[in-house]
Length: 102
Image 1 (cartoon, rainbow, N blue to C red):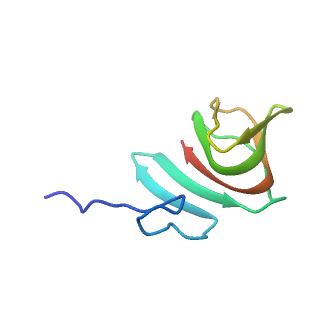
Image 2: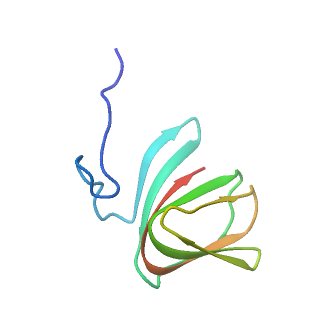
């Protein structure tokens, strides 16, 4: 028997909303994670790095993601792929929701 299907809404759809928490791990399987994060306008994530490639997609809002002093503005619908080990930071220009796969 398989575990029950999990569902929810990240953008206010018909399923139960994920809510206002700052971070929610949606899936953690064999060391790989899918993480839903929310940010307030003006919030920052200081420079850090990950040992694996990181895929970030913006569900809502506007942010600047900086990799090695090169800023890239991203908005809803955009995505970035950050190479393993690359130093990167995030600055939120307006309230935002992102999905991270690492």
